[in-house]
Image 1 (cartoon, rainbow, N blue to C red):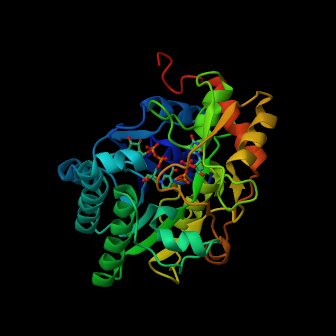
Image 2 (image 1 turned 120 degrees about the horizontal axis):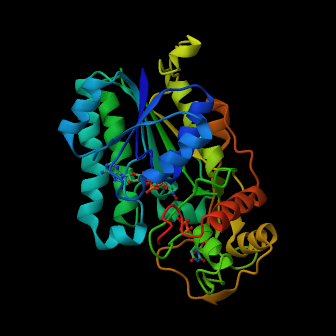
Length: 358
Ligand code: NAD
Ligand code: UDP
């Protein structure tokens, strides 16, 4: 019995493999490597001390998925695969809906055909309505969703709705939807981490590249927000904490994918289904808070310039994470200092990410 990890070679997926392995889960990685490299899996193999079954495939390829479900006994799926760049999604909406929404439909059809009915889905805080995020932080799961402002966010919202409708049609499906806030940081080994293509869109990888000398300065988008120092506030969550939330979600759904070596079977019935849960820390930090913490962690100066607001950004966005503690027994444990230290270890050990020729 294995868990199929779509998008398992990517940033959050690769970290989740490490945590799943620590908890003795068996898994298979399915990824088309469109935004990752197999090197991440080689590094994970080193950390966990065993080899990983990897299938190079696209979630839109039903035949390939069927082959995988025929060749392996898949108990459940953790579905990370998707495109995630907000700006790019505005320029290429059809590609984003095809990859994220159509890809998920193909995956769910094959899961249904093979009676594999447990899925953990990577959603995002972007599904909350913009108006709501402006007025009602910290966000709880009952805040209104939809009213998304870009195709990426809309694709996540659509998939949430598809999963809910699927459950209504067949309540033997067990579904956990995790709404991530801002994942950052890296595994403490410094061997796996976030490896963005080109100029990073997100704050932490951008700061890391300034500190390591790849970029001259950080543009701070907006300094006149209604926040403690005028810069945008977000809920940054360490990727290892986030990965552990997936292990908890899989446990919650009940799985038979524990390594047969230890001869255990976990059987539990989720009380709430589909489960929709925020994964954040509940603490908001501003852009300048992160810059200062990063300077301290790295011992490097991070040059920055205050520039205009970025279109579509809001002042504050952070989670009320108490429901995750209540239903999953999960809460974030890592501090902003650890997030910066681990990001720096990864960035300084791997200035060109996984690709030495970059
Ligand atoms: P990532 O790009 O590092 O990983 C995604 C992986 O999916 C990549 O390895 C990519 O090659 C693969 N992939 C993409 N399309 C595929 C397809 N059609 N078939 C097979 N594989 C495919 O991204 P990540 O940061 O690890 O994010 C994982 C998931 O979490 C994504 O769904 C993303 O939208 C979601 N998420 C990420 C963040 C974030 O800030 N990183 C925040 C909220 C939600
Ligand atoms: N940000 C910034 N400069 C950058 C990238 C991001 O000032 O180069 C700010 C952005 O305006 C927001 C915060 O950092 O306030 C987090 O942005 P990110 O893109 O990482 O995540 P988001 O919350 O927008 O998904």
